[in-house]
View 1 (cartoon, one colour):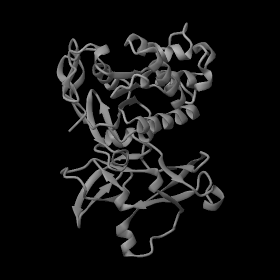
View 2 (cartoon, helix red, strand yellow; view 1 turned 45 degrees about the vertical axis):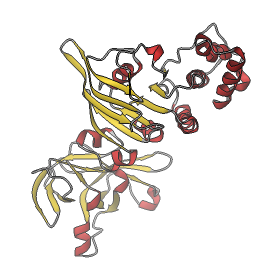
View 3 (tube, helix red, strand yellow; view 1 turned 60 degrees about the horizontal axis):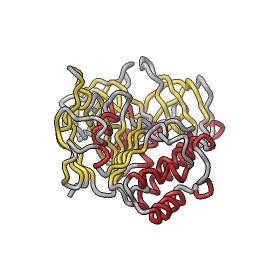
View 4 (cartoon, helix red, strand yellow; view 1 turned 60 degrees about the vertical axis):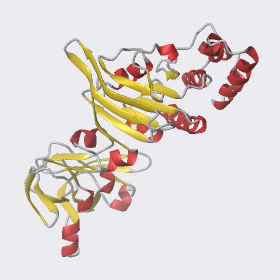
Amino acid sequence: MSHLEIKNLVKQYGSNTVVKDLNIAINRGEMLSLLGPSGCGKSTTLRMIAGLQDPTSGSILLGQRDLTKVPPHKRDVGLVFQNYALFPHLNMYDNVAFGLRRKGVPKSEIKDRVEAALRSVQLSSFVKRFPAQLSGGQQQRVALARTLVLQPTLVLFDEPLSNLDAKLRQALGIEIRSLQKEFGFTGIFVTHDQEEAMVLSDRIAVMNHGRIVQIGTPQQIYTEPADSFVADFVGESNLVEASALDAGNGKWRFELPGGQKIMAEKTVKAASPTYVMVRPETVEVLPEGTGLSDVRDLESFNSLSGNVSFIHYTGASYLIGVVIEKMDKHFIARLNQTTKELGLQIGDKVQVRWPVQSTRIF
């Protein structure tokens, strides 16, 4: 049975509908990320679950308890804000203890719970410091401890890492995931950062224009995108508009701008798919004239001709851009070999090659 269930949730502002008939069921102890571009409705959805905004219609059930009309402070829901929302005149201890005191928890119990919460976020030695004396990462840890000390069954995260630098954001994201597993709370994490969603989530709900367009595990979202929007939004992709020519032997044959042809396995029921998608890490870049060895290879691999347009070193790999005739975007490959090993230079004529089974169609 689902721990949190959202049924037919709608939010309208006049004639503008920002959340459209949303339905989600989340299991106890699960972390779900709402992922999507700015303005897709993910933060509005979170605020309705928290009780900070009233839905136009629909219902929100937590453990079979209908929260739709329940005030925020009576929902047993924790909320971690983007801007930390700490009290500047209170030290760390008092910031974390504030909610417990409001609930009338005995003083001795408050001490034990606050100290345990601060230990969990590795800030026990900073209890007397004030927010202005803390870094952004430390302030966000205090905000997280302040939420966890109340022991809510549901914790909502409203883009809490967006104000931090990339390295700290990654480290704190991993820490949040570890704490979620340790405490076992159900969580909903709002973000527009795909890597953040991948690291933090059991499942990801990708939103666009107020709707969920796909929900699944991080692996499913990345390797089996439901449509061209998800394919383009989540991760790097080569998304190309193509003309479907025919389908036979379980494969589609496509013509790309410029006349080159590729194949894809017939994995969708669409009468005539219009997009093909290839992930950069599945692509090889080879010198022009490197032929496929036999007929079986011709049936198993796609190959396009072009010219190297850029070579970018990213630390762990190289991004190689290839200009394909009449394509309006670079075709991208992500390779682990060095450019010396590849023997590539900008302007070289090359072939980009990838397995037919790695080609997604929409």
